Image 1 (cartoon, helix red, strand yellow):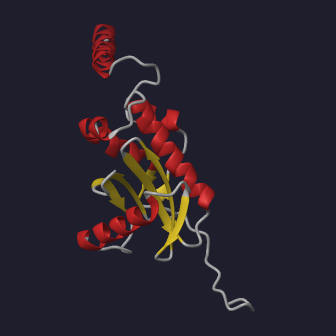
Image 2 (cartoon, helix red, strand yellow; image 1 turned 120 degrees about the horizontal axis):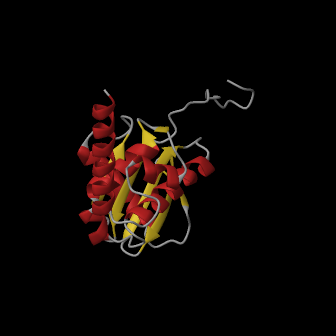
Image 3 (cartoon, one colour; image 1 turned 90 degrees about the vertical axis):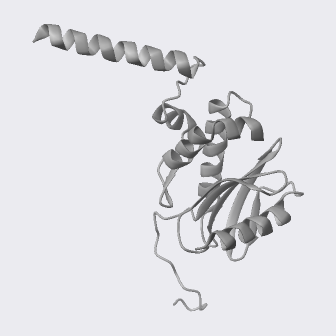
Length: 180
């Protein structure tokens, strides 16, 4: 302990406690918790409700609640949240939030709203998993996240992209079989 009586904490890679997206009624659409701060679904939903009630009518981007630092952003009918401990650097948490929003914005073709998110939930989970793994921030560049989850940075449709990838793979296999 230091002279002021505060406990210094060792730096840790485990910076994110949770990432969740709620609709404009405060209902969970996507949630990933990375430690046992809220071990049960009931506790998680109670926490999310409390966070939503404190944040959905404010213009701020940060909140301190239940000993946690929460950064958040809203878009149309969605609320995006990233949660860290009380001593966590808000700028790091904001970088995660910005990367999440920008990646989803690109993936959803700038249509970041509930219906579009629900239609692309598998991609949304992949985006979250590319940004944070087990509470550790892996990536903060939305372009890199999009590339990692196989969404082309150019605006070619996913179906065309998949066909192009299959054709390229087939060409490679034929080329190698002919060279043998």
